[in-house]
Length: 252
Image 1 (tube, one colour):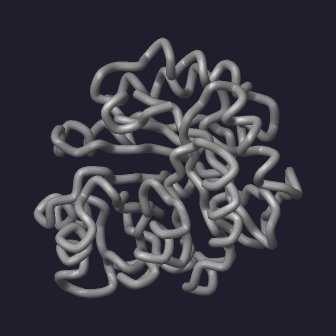
Image 2: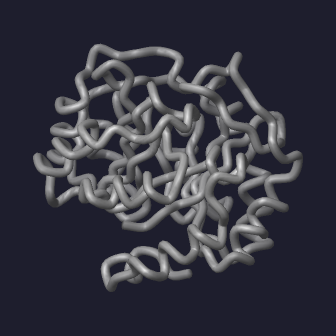
C-alpha cells in the first residue's frame, strides 16, 4: 500500500472539514505551496489535492493553485473538486494534474463513466465513490444519492475503471481510526480494482491496518496537520512498502 498526503483547499488556504461539513472547518496553513514543498522535501512524490470551493459550487476555483504546485514541485498530483464535465477534466490535466478525481459527474447520468475512460484512459482518472450511511455522496458530500456503494462500484468496474477512491465520510476528519470492515468487503469483491481509502486515519498504526485490508493506497490529511503523523514517517512507510506495481504508477 502507498500512503498519500492530502491538502484540502478553501479560500486559497489548507483546511480540513469534519465529516465533509463546511460548517466544521479548521484552517491550518495559508499557503498550500509551502505544505506541498514540505511534502516534496520529505521524499514523498505525490499529493491528493482537493478543491473544496469547487466541490461546493460545481466548478473548480483553485486551478491556479494546482498550476503553481505542479509547476514549482515535482509532485504527481491527483486533483478533485467540482470536476463535472469533460472539458473541465481537460482543463485540470492541462493545469498539471497527474490524475483527476471524479465523483458527482460519474453518477449524474448513464454512460458517463464509460465515456470518461474512453476519452481520457483509465490511468488518468480516479473514481471517487465516497460513502455516507451506505450510499454514495455527491455535490461536495452535501447530498446523499440513492445509489448503494456496491452498485456504484459494480457500474464503475463494468465501465473499465481501475482506480477507485472510497472514503468513509462518517470518519473523515475525525481521527477516530478507520473501520477495516468498511474496506475489506470491497477489496474482496473487486480484487482487480486499485482501491484508495480514507477517513479517520490518526496514526501510523491506522495505515498498517488499512494495508492489511488489501488497499492499494490510503489518503491522510488531518493527522499530518495535527502532528499525529510526520511527513518523514509517511515517507519511510512508502519506501518500506514500495513495490514494482507502485513504482509503475507513481514515480517519486
